Image 1 (cartoon, helix red, strand yellow):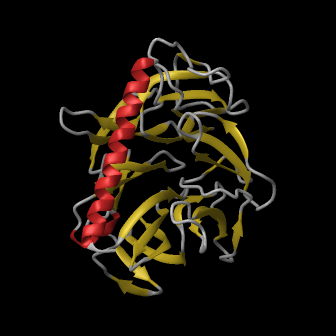
Image 2: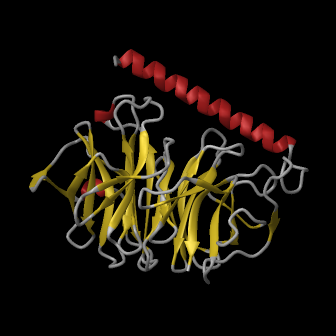
Image 3: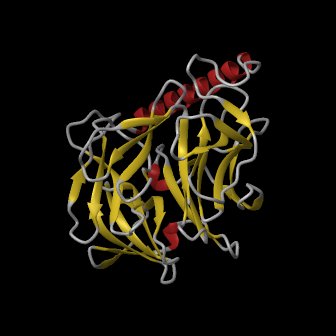
Length: 339
């Protein structure tokens, strides 16, 4: 693609995003007086206390039109499509574990928006905040709650031309120490030290040892699953064609989206699970393209978002390749299971 073509594509994309954003604002204003939901059968949402402690709860960003759109809401995990309790806190992306949350927010300015990451305690109070250098994409908290990570789309890298690149950051929630970009880590690719200006990282997921993490590395036109070490500040490639990894609760498997040859360019991904011991890949029973970082509900089931009437709906599918996908909650995204 020529530089002129890339510029035209980027301009068109920005125009579409601006139009969509304006339409969303107008749509929300027009329906602001409707208390809970705009459509018959939509989710019922009422304000109330939401905490990140306890068990048997599912917290996510509510996507239903109305006064509580984009707020973190809670439902019983056993009834994910049931009535919701809205917290009042708005997030673009969210995750939580062990009483710690991370909320990626837009800060609306007179000319343009900026973005920030809030580290939350169990009562959704902000204990730290950090500037995010671009549009938020992914968020994760470690199983212990001691680390949080986020990914943002950014522009301005010389190697990227008119295309976006990414920044993946990790923060120690106990000390506030921030690693603003995983690009500062030493890369080992195929057993050898590797350096490249075009290295990009996204989609961090943590192991339970407060040291190991996994992420996607993109470089040289390929994507890799990497295992990271927070103490040694290294990342090591493990497998190719892996995006947005998610580590299973038992630490033995990675769920991820994989580009599959022959699929449309605008819908190229399928959900897979990788066995970290054997490196065997298993395609899952979801036939649609999933552009999300899937979440393990437990060791047997994955939860993820797909486009829906309200923006996005949550689905689940067995992690062993059997069964069929099932919608579990409309108008929801960025889920976190508590306890």
